Length: 385
Ligand SMILES: *Cc1c(COP(=O)(O)O)cnc(C)c1O
Image 1: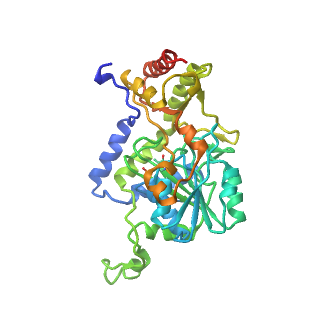
Image 2: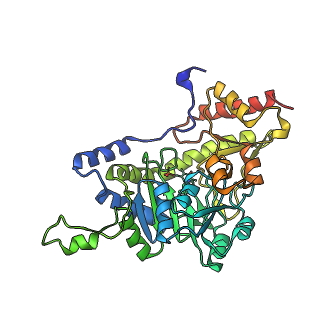
Image 3: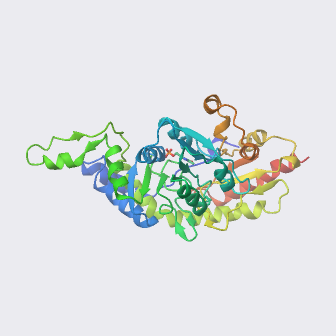
């Protein structure tokens, strides 16, 4: 295939609206956190019926902030899934705490609640469930486990901005929820994230913690004397979002319904192409949620083909199709192996060897989607066992 026809795994989608929203901010003279970011927070809060929403510059920042809010430190354990992006575990290490992995359910890719139960110890302070590919974790059960041992739940909702759980939007289901607006996510601002919260004290503390630990109260108090004054209450972080990114976020959130409708049409084409294939299994969506269609993951039935997942990916690449793998289990990465020793997560590891994420984004044309589906079936057929 010609290089200019290569179908990338992901491609951000924007309209004239995004362009003019960004232009307005650029011309306004205020590029950092300001009124536009506040407007984005308000909109987002209403969208997911959260009590509080704080816009940050990544989901990673939101996860780290969440753990800091509940004082996670050296003696603590935080339970999460190995089937996630490294950030979900890295932030636990940033706090000096120990990540404890609970293996997944291979049908849904989600953390398995029984394994969470078995992973709990007296040091468990937090559980980070990850909403895999748009599937929402079994949040009621996870909340209940956490409550029974006095731990918090910090939901990694990087994939689930458009998902619902028992009819409710993700963002109000747990103590703290972290969203991502990274370039490949359903809402994209280049880099960006949101932390939604239930507790006002957490919210106030999070605002300070993510802006250098500067006390705004102090600034207010000295307003008349000298507006330059602020106090440093703690050594905080620089995690705020910019108005430039927030302008993109506002338009993307408005367009989310339309973008999801396009994703749905793409998923339908893939579904009908693959549903009767003996070579491919599809991810299941649990009854309790509506999948927000972040990733379209196929699972190769490796006993029906003679090639590996990696060789399969290479053949698709030669047909001009970019794909990805979500994710390599964190427990087999060199740092975590060294840090935690050899932790075996048999289901996540078996799952990993089978999965391929296909292109899924609003700017894909239907002919591209048909082309991808046909080539996937062709590669499988030509390597049938
Ligand atoms: C993308 C992603 C993150 C990190 O998001 P950033 O906004 O890039 O920090 C965290 N968790 C999961 C599951 C992700 O897919």
